[in-house]
Length: 479
Image 1 (cartoon, rainbow, N blue to C red):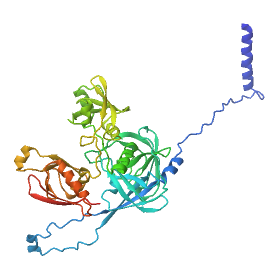
Image 2 (cartoon, one colour; image 1 turned 45 degrees about the horizontal axis):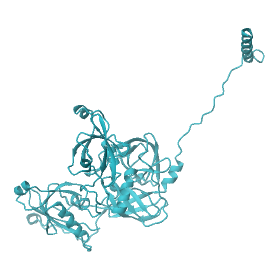
Image 3 (cartoon, helix red, strand yellow; image 1 turned 90 degrees about the horizontal axis):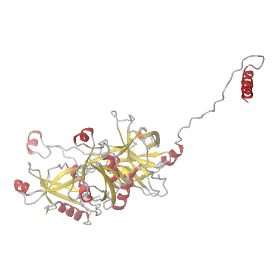
């Protein structure tokens, strides 16, 4: 048997060699046929077709603030230089034009854009991809997330479906659709470069910055446009770029659709965002912080101070805890925590995992609003419209300032106070001749003006800065 097997091997070898020296002994070339592999490239045509018709061009007209002559009606100045020219009050106010993008989210004409696209605008015009033009009404805006909701009177408009920004992965292909440099209906492609980016471009106290970063080309005019996945689903609203020139430099940022959906739903239902808060001061974990207090992790949001009447306090959160999970979603930074909490409303019940020493503790939290309760915040909120946060004046400060009553402006965001130049530290004494003895008096007076049925809705404010004289402001809060 062994000899037979050896013989078979020899025959097989000779058979192969014989094939090599076929055709008159000339050596033949052995070739191996390799399968042809066709490169597979991503196909964006379906996503582009589904989204480009739902993205609109938003044009606005913003009143230009004219500088007044500081010496107008100054008798001393007029004595030397003569009376100053007085301009008629009825002349037309100059306007500045601006443009951006928006996304149709319902067939009956609701459109999402950025707050900074329509901020302070007197007129808003929307042009569809088919060149139809409509006047748009501002339904509501949220400076904290830079999202605004518009409405045009139309039916059967092309709209875009919401996708999931939570399931979006780094490296995944996305398209940016908008109107950069007034080039309508422009589509660019890129990948998700990062998630939960905080780039500190929103100035409000309650800001939520957890941007999707992408390298899809985005330029001025893209703001408010769509960021879509390869299925043509909306995953973000393009908002900002990081650039030293003002033009695309490889870094673009979009508000995640998880935040957009919450903001839009609240504005439609309540007129204002129902923002849930934990009532804690949080910070990202740095290497220095971890070493200083012997933390066992670099992931999560570190809990500093906790409000006495806060949702976190009631749930059992403690100073020094590290929040690592919200309702089953991992939290690795402050931005991610803000994004997750930002999806919920006051009164919602969630689970929060905290790292406490070496142990993970699961806590049940009932979220509250900024007023410390679970009630619905009115769309006629003085804090939202005036853009100011107020605080009570303590007895010691009243004695020092010789006051019987008054409320101090603690901080200022975008709103009527900022437009009038009112700054933190201003003491509000009276509004519409009503003494302001507590923070609740401001809201009460504000609501009385809003609901008075008159077209003239104004607040006449009397107050002062501690180092200055009594000052008067007239603020129009009408539509």
